[in-house]
Amino acid sequence: MSLVRPAGFLALCALFLAHPAFARTLDGPALLDAVAQARSARREQVKSLRADVVIGLTSRTWSGTGTCQGRIAARRPDSLRLLGYAAVATVFDATTDGDRFWIYLPMLQRAVTGKAEEESLLVALPILPNEIVDALFGEPYGAPEAGLRVLDVDGTKWVAWTLASGHEVRARYSGSMLLQRAELWAGGTRTARLDYHDYRKRSGVWWPTRIDFDWPEEQGHLSLTFETVRFNEPIDDKAFRFDAPEGVQVVPVTSDEAFGEAAR
Amino acid sequence: MKALAAILLLLPTLAFAGPRALLDHALRTTKDASATFRQTRTDALGETVTDGTLAYRKPRRLRLEWRGKAGATAFVNRDTVWFYQPGQKQVLKSRASAGGAPPALFLEESVDVLDRAYRVKEEGATGLVLEPRASSPWRRMKLVLDAKSGWPRSLVLEGRGGESTRLDFGRFKVNAGVSSAQLAPSFPKGTTVVEL
Image (cartoon, rainbow over all chains, first blue to last red):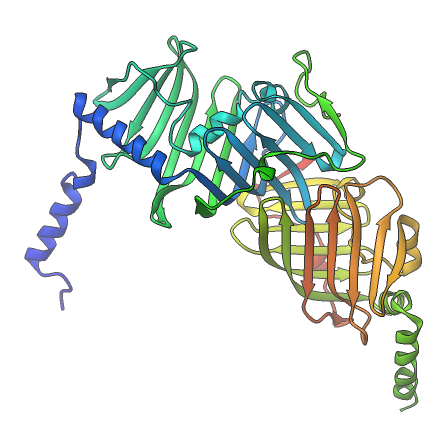
């Protein structure tokens, strides 16, 4: 017995072949409006999050790929705590309040601190803590202030804007206004890329299963794969402050130190 | 019959002798052991629970396996540890003593051996507290022993950063046989071994 009668089968084919309603193509002002509304709704919907994640890190500076389990807490506009652990041991504990960062490396019994923008000196990736927060909240590389425009790249519509630094951000959305990819461009060179994979609805919020951060020039990669995610729970300010454990040396990172020097 | 009587006589003696003697007897009379565990990690951001298994064979050969989405297996052989992450097809190989945890947890040949690296203090009738003698990222390890078998019911590892990892063990199967193959670090073809 056929489970799907011919008429039903044709209707199913039509559903698969046609552009589904959520993938409608917007252009021009309609697309910019839709993106602005989606961002505004996201700001209202997600103000903070806590999640269990799998953290993956790759950099040409290191041998192999670092992967560990982790926990993340983030709060708008720029507070972040990221803890990595493997087996029974803590691998790292990174904290930022937007102004300063601290990375505690228990195995070395050291903590490294500096201004938030200096973190890249330590991790050998051009990663800024607030960029992780921006990426988590769907505002890649910072919220657009002005100059929003639509780009047509090989038939695909992108939304672009220019940052105060002169960099251009290009973002591609699904028809349902979920961010799929964002790129950071300096002149004609793409310097960073963000990919949002496999959105699932969690506690009423469409949330990506994985976010990939890529830096082509540095051959660097950071991935956050989400297991459990909780939104808008109160997070104590203490979660975004680092208090050095007794006996742990806190070392400032300085601009003439290459990766890891401060941690040694 | 005489042996049974001797054991029956010995058990209360050990319990009376305190937790140190209790664990020492368990370690000395064990060739191999295995158990399941539930791991609860508590840190600044809350709790994470993982289930796993432990297999041990004297001297200091250990396999710890964590299940779940980010499953992993640690093999310890004397002072070498292999940390295998199937999801990454990667093994990190390092000195066990260079890690952020006691190399073989509490699984040494006797409490005298533990004494070399840790200050071992008794706490109550079944508790032991182990503090590392050398500088370490962890502050102390607390064991709560089963009053009959001497094997831990729970282990809490306290880190210097305020985080803790608690292992709640199921019943230990002792001297029931743990194969060499189970403890031998072996990985699927294509796995990358990174020496740290």
